[in-house]
Image (cartoon, rainbow, N blue to C red; front, top):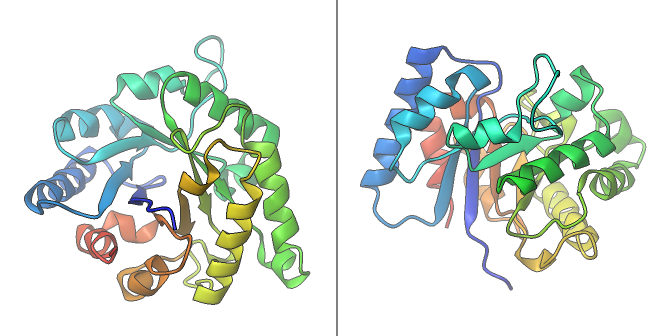
Length: 251
């Protein structure tokens, strides 16, 4: 089996003011720097206004920085959008794309997500492409088909295991307290792994994260599931103790 280093990514969503964000990021950076050799990479993705102050604060540490979205364009008359070039300028190495909240709240299509990922790749960013089914779709037996379609439409031409991470987040488990069972996660991650063949270079090396109500109490079990290469964490990423506990659950 291909050894893949775990990635624990914190999606802060629309939470935190400057003082909160700096305190959280500096706490995590300090823990990471003091931990010595670890078996995971740690990433925080603050809201856009916090990227520069957080990026400056953690510069030189092992804590990575990412954006929560980027535009498909690099500049121009696109009010409210943020370009991948701007993320790089802030010190970002990653960007989350196609999160279900973006798909639902902003009507983002697979094609738009693929265009954003291509723009991110062009600037050297690693795109974390999110996929996942709703509860209605799962109950109808459509989970595999939905995720297959999202992968086919959202991964751009030229994607590789080095520049693309997949995050499986069942929509019904995001912020609800519900979590997919280890068997559910194992089956879907195996399905995704198989679907990446032909869509991404070196698919066996590509990371597939699980997201959806990941917390310290279930992290050890989830991170031990085959083909789970880390986590995309929401609410628990806003508490240093919880986020660090999730990260250190990796073996």
